[in-house]
Image (tube, rainbow, N blue to C red):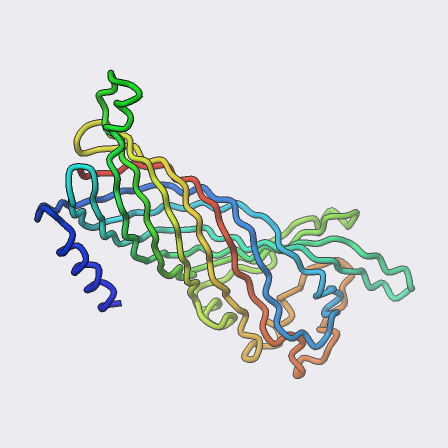
Length: 289
């Protein structure tokens, strides 16, 4: 990390025509649509706790949060600049997936039904977001000579960690199941729970962000943009999970018998986790020239 920062500063010193720098800050709300990718590695059984493991598929979910960028801007000339920004924020990150399950009523009339699950984390996001800025004011004036405002395009590629501080696990029955089981909260997670149930309590991410700044005056602008975010896998810690934790991976469906179908010590699934791709629309305010 230190070497990366050093290389960025060297690049700026070589290509910046002006020594002028200025503090820059922005705060915005990302409103996102997320597609989850289940990752199930080496299941010993295709059928666990009345769940058909090989039917587990991605699903869509809605995410929201708040993000702040803080750092310094280095002007290259009157139309171009580079900003080196830290990123800190909060996200509600929802990993959603669907699968098929069956009732187990011991009379031979088993029924296949659709089900879904949502693994939700409340995360503290910490990262780095370098941006390249292009002043679009002169381009706009070529089309509208009466334009007297200022507009700027910013493109950034960032990365960081989402630290899962708390969470919840929900599941939903989608067919004709008992209304009492339609949708319910199975379990809430504290940070201590997350450290115990998962390999690690953080989720690495990378992000491409494109923002337009519409300036009200020389120092304040309206921020509107879009982000493409990939959240890397977070895995359940199957090998070190207690029997009670292990059961709750697929717990809470109607008429499902207690206990895992396969013997616990065999660990039905070697690795079980989720990654996701998110498209977020950003709305906020930017401060600084």
